[in-house]
Amino acid sequence: MVAHRARLRPAVDGGTFLSTYLISCGGTGGHLSPGIALAEGLASRGHKATLLISQKRVDARLIEKYPDLNFVPIPGAPFTLQPGGFVKFIVSQTKGFFVSMKLVRTLKPAGIVGFGGFTTAAIIVAGRLRGVPVALHEANRVPGRAIRTLARFSRRVYLPPGINLPGLREGVIRHAGLPVRREITRLPREEACRLLGLDPSKKVLSIFGGSQGATVLNDWARRELPQLALEGIQLYCVTGLGKGMAEVQTLTAADRSKVTAVFSPFCDQVAALLSASDLVIGRAGAGSIAELIRCETPAIVLPYPHAADDHQRANAVWFEQQGAGLVIEQTKLPELTAAVFSLLRDDARRQSIRAHLNRLDHEATLTLILDDLENLNAGAKPAA
Ligand SMILES: CC(=O)N[C@H]1[C@@H](OP(=O)(O)OP(=O)(O)OC[C@H]2O[C@@H](n3ccc(=O)[nH]c3=O)[C@H](O)[C@@H]2O)O[C@H](CO)[C@@H](O)[C@@H]1O
Image (cartoon, rainbow, N blue to C red; front, side):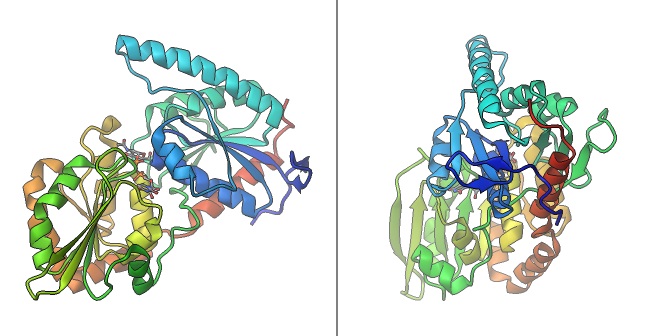
């Protein structure tokens, strides 16, 4: 670890901390979760972070669990060329820019990190104008529009291993995975099942369709529930906010034992969910994949077909190439049921997937980014 060479700044609450960082990470769980992970890492090194988030419901829900972190919602809307949407984009980005300028002026950050998405542009431009070192993080295996546009303003661009962005100055790109929140770690299965109200002696299948949930996967789960229950397989389906009510059902298996099925709009216990699950069916969001790797949970992923530049397919292909999971295209949904039962019956196959997950990066990403940010800061001129 690099020594704490960062400048000492007075804390707003009267204590002292090394430096303040601004982290722009709003809009989806896939942006917010790594932002939280970075803020946790900075705090562990004595720094302070303010996280800029969107005004979307999913952001508000996800941050409930982190009362000790400092979140600031800022205006912003996704880019679109549709007339009404484009005007909204311009107006909200302009507002976001003025809020960002004020934040940079008052907080005097030592660095700004943007995780992409529509909340990132304003703060990166504001930081750049005020001479603050700015860094971008791309989680996906196809860099998004915000990252592609803003990369030339940035001192660092963190990209997934093997991915490049042409035209950047030498030394700007660093290869790093997605930082994962501290709490996401593999728990003993019995404990995880207990936390979720499940029976550890029975298999657990989870549906985890990213931060918004996935309607096709929810529908599949409801359709297949009788058959799953008959085989004694418990179901934990995270439906997504606004996609159904919380519900617990008790069904009967072929051997007359009771089988639980849980439907929940949001999950606050992702580590327990992934640790209890014998198999997860999910999307191929970078956050989900990083957390499946961290908890070593076998999964079948169905890339969201409308993701920008088809980036979920690229994530999924990489995941499968590592032997870390299986991919089924959404157009081949009818194949899912057979694949699920086959994998749940095949303990050796799931064990082999776990072995592949185990050899993938677990901890190094966050350390790499923290070291690098501290180095950047140490070499930086004081913010204007
Ligand atoms: C539709 C779409 O374009 N989704 C994108 C979005 O992912 P999206 O936010 O949909 O999903 P991800 O899988 O990347 O991340 C979800 C995050 O939310 C957390 N979570 C989710 C549900 C829940 O109930 N509780 C909870 O805590 C997960 O633990 C995870 O940390 O950003 C990702 C990162 O750029 C992209 O890879 C995805 O393609």
